[in-house]
Image (tube, rainbow, N blue to C red; front, side, top):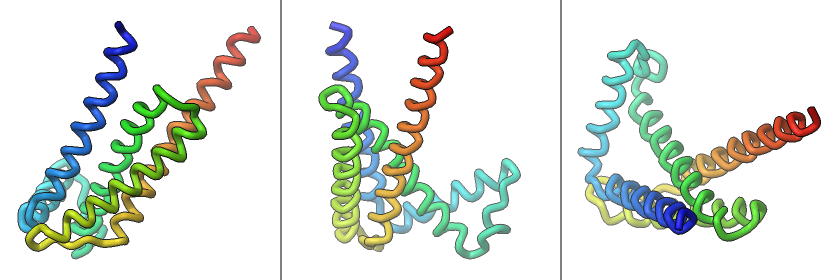
Length: 154
């Protein structure tokens, strides 16, 4: 019973996150731009001056960081679902493929949204976000395994 709940929760989280990405991509450029400006203002209010560092590129940087982080989360959720069914090596490969394909479909979707554009650059950023998460996850898992082996030896 508990296993079925875990499977269901992992699938639900993945589907919800895919929906969140779709909804965010479905917003016209003006709304998306105002959200980025909101993030810049929020960061500024806590003492992080993105405009001071990046100038007019601040909005661009925030938007690309958002892409990167969105797809890191997508990668984690996809990894968790696939990990229920196949070994880690296959999970890594299939997760990267799914993240890449979803990034491609997301950019195609944006071609049909007012003021938005589909960009190969964004597919690359999205996919790199997914790959980065996988690398971090594998490193954390490896460190946990090393600690467990050391603990078992004691």
